[in-house]
Amino acid sequence: MICPHCNAEIPDDSIFCSSCGKRIESSPAEVIPSDTIVCPNCGAYNSTDSNFCSNCRTPLSQTALTNMKEQSELQLQQAQIKMQAMALKAQQEQLQLQQQQYSSMARCPRCGSTSLSGNKKGFGIGKAVVGAALVGPLGLVAGNIGAKKVQVTCLKCGKKFKM
Image (cartoon, rainbow, N blue to C red; front, side):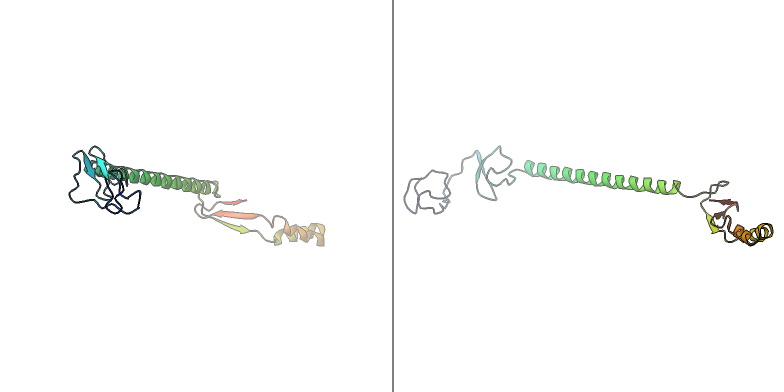
């Protein structure tokens, strides 16, 4: 082929002239071989058994488009499955945490209820009077015996116990 701009000899499939660098315009009379497909995106010639353009990877056949669509749908499904698996794992971890919290709660020894009320015992006047009568003024200290303990009452069955 001869460049129409500089008359240099160039290969037949050239897009640009190797001598002057100008683009070679394809003539309308150019004959396309019967065993080639022209890419609709870049205009490159490809063989008829090609599914994709060798220049720009544009799908050349309906089969290629269908395959690409199926692959993208498959990738989408795989991503959705991964996200569902991650959500399931998070739910399982949350359930385990809730089970641990529930099993560590204080319970009534009689009925197993978790509805409990706790009250701290204060200074015992009765103990202080008995202590003062037996030992004297120092016996007033006996009123503090057991003052720091908590008495728990079950709101369901009424059982009282100390913790």
